[in-house]
Length: 175
Image (cartoon, rainbow, N blue to C red):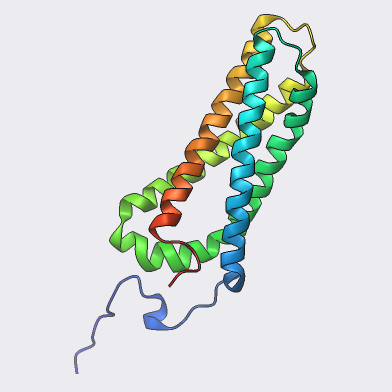
């Protein structure tokens, strides 16, 4: 008797149901991840605007200090919720659907992960530099903080938009 190949090379354990950590809470984690993502977009954008104002000579030290802790904290919380959600995404979305039907979306998601990691480093650096910026900072220092902050915020925006696209294609927790 000839052995039949599985219906799909992506079928886990020849069709057996695999238990994935945090799967029962996947929808709630996805919502939390989205809300924290919007928070990260808004706080990093506000920090970038404040740093541009500082580069133009405005006294915005209170804003730089305020958004200097909010932006990295929101990014870190968002990254941690994404890490908790990742095993469910990997098994139920990526392996089960996207690698077969939309490999370009898988590559976009990988790009989003890299952009997010780089943005975290830039935003933390900009936040620390912005907090240390004196009220009468030399223009070159203020522009450096503005460049770090703007690049970090731009990468956060890109990661958020890619994340929304991937979620619209196949959300975690959906059949």
